[in-house]
Image 1 (tube, helix red, strand yellow):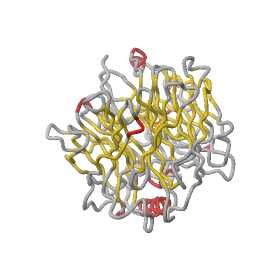
Image 2 (cartoon, rainbow, N blue to C red):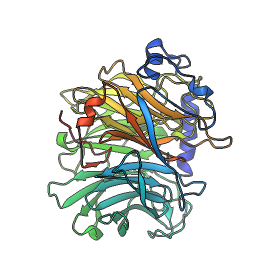
Image 3 (cartoon, rainbow, N blue to C red):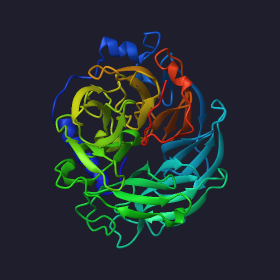
Length: 474
């Protein structure tokens, strides 16, 4: 999802253009291979996704829902929407438009709420590193306090950017710093510095916003914030590299939506509304664009990027309609609002291969499009779990770059009439389970049992941010 105002208008414009132009194979009737895959291990379809009743649950045989933590006060307002997730030890941090929640997942079947921190600011996407939680704020506030009021994007003054919390005491996070960034912070990603006492945060945001002092034209840059780990109050913007200068994509819209870094490869992949980028981050404060990729026929809103474990592929996702429309109904096709698999050549160029879109047709009332996901750590294979809003959670294999296929899923039926925004915002695999941040239903915990993904159960990590990738070993 995107900034209010101009961003919503952009989403509708992109959707209108994409849905009325171009052609592709119909996804109304999945192929026999896709239909078998979508039904899980048994290969027998249970019932059509589009026929589900309100909140009715459907899942493949190889995925079992084992827990749900519903949203509760103070996150019980009409727009108390859950957003992204970050993980550390026995805890998962769940962003919410009204703040964030700390969950204890030491027993995944019985997760517990440790605390809910009320600190409004869309989207409140989160990243974690050691004792620090980085939270993105992408709407203008009267000031940087949690108690501040939201302001119109065209207001003559206001604050937006990143907030930094000390989470050494998980039950009592302490708000320690705020850094204003150009056009705010839609998403953020942590990049380790050469010195372990220094973190860099790449801040992504769309823009410009006409008349908004925080977001001037041309906004062809990202903001890089330096965070001294031992003194986070001294965090500051140290660079604003114009990586996207002169680009034509995205209807003239600038900035970037999401960046994923792979420090071991000194690479970043950026999904930037109209284009995809491969970036050299050998010097974290001086990133250099290596390759730019566009797909005007099939992609409308480049939203996110995920490397495979070898760093030889990138999956780019298209958030056609900005998460607000039903791109998975019978009127869609296999490329709009889908993923594209790109291979990285030895010369660091991007070459497009296959597309993947969930093969389960959703009802016209369900917002559904490719959204946040990450790898399941299966040595030797490229398998990803991903959120699709009301399309649910999908597990898919792109080891064969030209023929990706779904191998498991979990979803609910539509929300009650009148509600059009819901479903899984983010879905990630962490130490043996899948965790899904559902916009209106809270935190879902899923177990996957499948010979194709079972090797991942032997991989344990101490900290996980989906947008900061590290290689795993079998």
